Amino acid sequence: MRTVTNVFLLNLAVSDILLGVLCMPFTLVGSLLKDFVFGHFMCRLIPFMQGNHFVYFIFIIYLFSICCCCYKNEMFNSC
Image 1 (cartoon, rainbow, N blue to C red):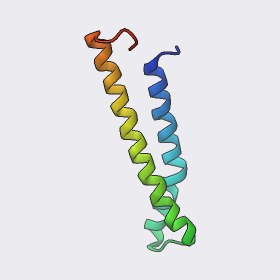
Image 2: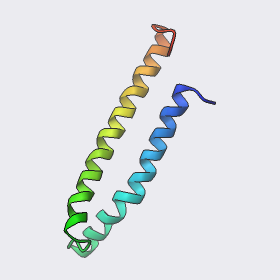
Image 3: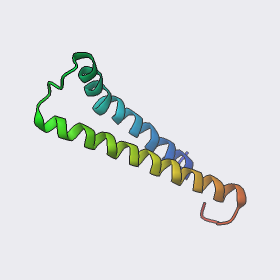
Image 4: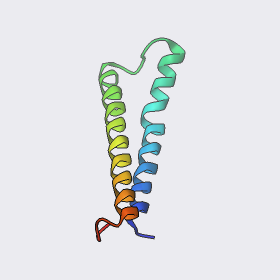
């Protein structure tokens, strides 16, 4: 089960768990209360984390598609 595809899928799962734990609760509380109550530091940190999650997610999807393309076309022996 230690294939490249499974590693990419594991990375996506970890990314989604981190999104659910680190980003969604703060966004929900901020939306419900109409005010950000977590302080100045968290006000700067949460958008940074959300942006990094987005870039990480797109990068993993990109690598996953390249790997699948290489595997299906049998262009490289290492894929």
